[in-house]
Image 1 (cartoon, rainbow, N blue to C red):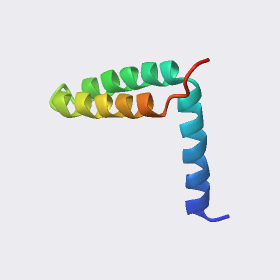
Image 2: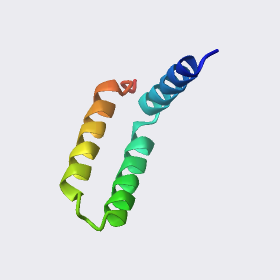
Image 3: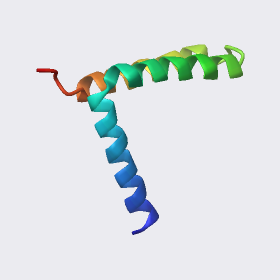
Length: 67
């Protein structure tokens, strides 16, 4: 199995976990945004917030509806 195949499998596993546990992933994203913002001294706050919002919107679009 090549590197590309391994990365594809890993991406599939991440997507499945994100769809099954969106709240946990969103919490991790929020924490990561804070860490990155702190590490950059707030100089890229708008870009970080924008990326976080896009990631959250993507998660919302992929979330498995709870029945």
